Structures are given as structure tokens and as C-alpha cells.
Image 1 (tube, rainbow, N blue to C red):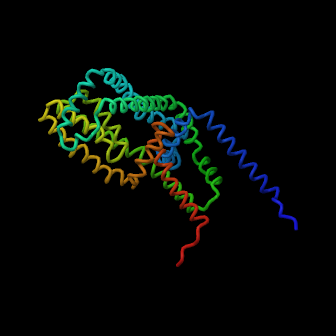
Image 2: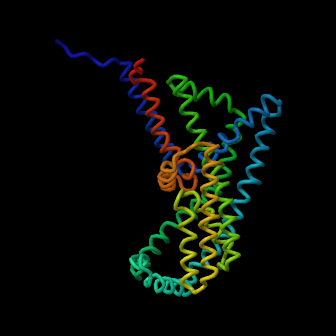
Length: 343
């Protein structure tokens, strides 16, 4: 008995799928440099779409002018502040890292101070440990700074893509819905998860970072920390890492204050950072971020680490989105192919 033959239709489908995947990989490979621009455009589109449709469909505003208005809004309130922060931070961080004598002096003071404390004395502060830390920092820091600069350069691509996404938004969404061959329930779950993660990370995290950075900056200034503005900004940036983010900045600063003999300022600074800077983190995460979207901290932590590795600075948004999408895809699979629940 002859074995059943594979139909030409199935063969054609397999060949077509292989061609599509190969074409997508080829495009991704050669347009990889512009990927941050496309991701930024998608982020801004998801943030703006409801307002854009409300203005153009309910208020009857002109689509082109409204899209240009949103792009202008993005330049004024996103690009220019980001450019100002980078322009302020990079030269000051370079000066700080170049001042090796001051760094070694404070490091030796910290090492001597910690060697006399019961718990802190177990921390390895040898010259080899410091060299390994600085070596890893010098490898990681340029990647962060370069990815920030790359985001700024890709903003031109982002606004170009965003313009056409806004103007042709309804048509684009209808086409994507047509290409997604699953039920309405699955589409809604996937879309809700995307909106949730983008809204939480694109709106909530910057607001949280700004609040913590300003509060930390004020404390550093009041209690005599050098470069209070710079370290306040660094504290705000560290907010993207939940739980230990800001502590990774203000705890070493407090230890240095104790080690250099500024006991009064160090004590008040420690109390200030623990109760105010850390308190604002807890309050806003359980109010603002919970209102925008109740995202589990573990998804944010590991998603940020994954995203920074894959997408640079925009990985702060798309890393958690990619991680949480795995669970949504499992839900889609259960909706489409899982067994029905027993009544």
C-alpha cells in the first residue's frame, strides 16, 4: 500500500512560510540599526492612539495637522529633555571617572571604615575586586550611553514612522487584525497586555524616576553630597530597576559619607533616603503604577535586564513586554486549542 502523499497545498504553504521568515530575518538584519526608531514609533503610537482618534474622529480635526502636533509635542516634552539630561550627564560622568585619585581616596576610606564593622567587613573590597568592578563597568556603561545616543539619532526614523502610523492608524490596525488568525478573545488579550506594558513602562516609570530623582537630589544637596544634581539624576535613572534600583545609588553614597567622617550629615542623609526616597518608590508603585497597570515586579526586573541586552534603552519598555507576552501567548494557545473548561 502506497504511503499517503503530502498535498501540493501544504508544500506551497511551507515554502511560503519559509520565504516569509527568511525575508523578515533578512530585513531585520540589515535594518537592525534603525530598530530603536521603529520601537519608539510603536511606543508613541500606543500612547497617543486614543487621543489621536478622539481628536480626528470625534472632534473632526485634520489628520495630518494632528499627527504633526503630536510629533511636535514629542519633540518638546520627550526629545529635548532627554537631550538635555544626556548633555548634562556625559561630561560630568567623564570628569568623575577620570578623577582616579579622588575615587581611590574615597575607596580607601570606605575600605578602612567597613573593615571595622561586623557585617560590612565580609564584603570583598580588595584592589582586585575593585579592578574587576571597574572593568565590567567600563564595558557596560559605554553600551548604555551609546544606546541612548542611538535612540536620539533614531528619533528621526521614529517620527517619520509615527506620522504614517497615526494618519493610517485605522487601516493599519484592520490589516493587522486580518493577519492575526485567532479569535476576538485572543486578540483582545494580546492587545490589552501590549497596552498595559507600554503604558506602565513608558509613562509610569519616567514619572516615578523623575519624582525619586528630584527628592534624592534635594537630599544630596542639603546634606553636602558632591555633584548632588548628577547623583540625583543617576538615582532617578536607577528607578527602572525595582526594589534595589535607587538603593544601589544612595546606599554607597551614604557609606562614603560615613567613611569620610561626616557623621551628622551621613546619618540624616541615610534616614532621608530610606524614608523619603524609598518611601516615594513604595507609594508610587502601589498607587500610580498600580493604576496604570498592575505589573509584577519580577516581570519588570528580568524584562529590563533582557530588554537592555536586546534593544538598548528602549528595552526598558519592550523587555518587560516581551517577557509578559510569553504568558499571553500561552493564554492564546489555551483559548484556541486548549480543552474547554468543565462546567
